[in-house]
Length: 274
Ligand SMILES: Nc1ncnc2c1ncn2[C@@H]1O[C@H](COP(=O)(O)OP(=O)(O)OP(=O)(O)O)[C@@H](O)[C@H]1O
Ligand SMILES: Cc1ncc(C[n+]2csc(CCOP(=O)(O)O)c2C)c(N)n1
Ligand SMILES: [Mg+2]
Image (cartoon, rainbow, N blue to C red; front, side):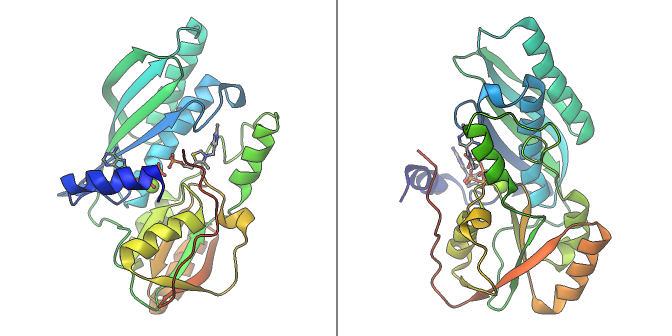
């Protein structure tokens, strides 16, 4: 078991809330995601403004994954002393832009000096119908939104020394807010795809004590692509037509690829962690 999973399993002793994309307390959802230079991005790949925007977007993704509307954000940031005033301004502009774009007010945080650029955001969001990772029943259909695989390709370009395209989904994830808000009543479970479909399916498998029978294999290039920020959802077969209709309504590609079944799930991807 990797170190990260082990650590999370240990701290889970502190609260039953741990384990989903966000913690639901009443109708409020709390979530946090870190975005760290060297782990999640390299400085040469994106402008400071793009880095700030993406850090915000990947955090909003967890709120969307819980079917929650983002309201407030708290930002902790470590800025390297090598940053120029212009770069610090650009970073701030990225957070201000994203805060407006997602309707999520930045109400506070903490700013420190640090060797690398580190960003941690906490999002407070509101939901009337939380979409959890648990609740999948045998026979439920599994589907993902969008087209997956592009983020991994883009990452490979970047690691090979090329520069990111400003409009790419890797730089600017497109979130499926409207589709999820409309489809939530018909979904049994959902999560956002941050580590890659196959790795995220492992979490659904463990949590729901189920395996999956695939209608067609996804292939590693799509299945092991992380940072997609598309949605992975499960719903009963009788809801299929309705969910597909809502996907079309919101121009959201939806691929039904498996059903929950009594098989043993094996994640074919290499872990990139630690
Ligand atoms: N340091 C921590 N302390 C407490 N809870 C944690 C900690 N790290 C993770 N968790 C909780 O463990 C669960 C799994 O976290 P994980 O980071 O894998 O979620 P995720 O949404 O898939 O994240 P990411 O988008 O970073 O891949 C979440 O409920 C999260 O809140
Ligand atoms: C410098 C650099 N190296 C590797 C990657 C690939 N990568 C990092 S985190 C992650 C998934 C989500 O992880 P987490 O669970 O930590 O949020 C992926 C696919 C990258 N983006 N930048
Ligand atoms: Mg998540």
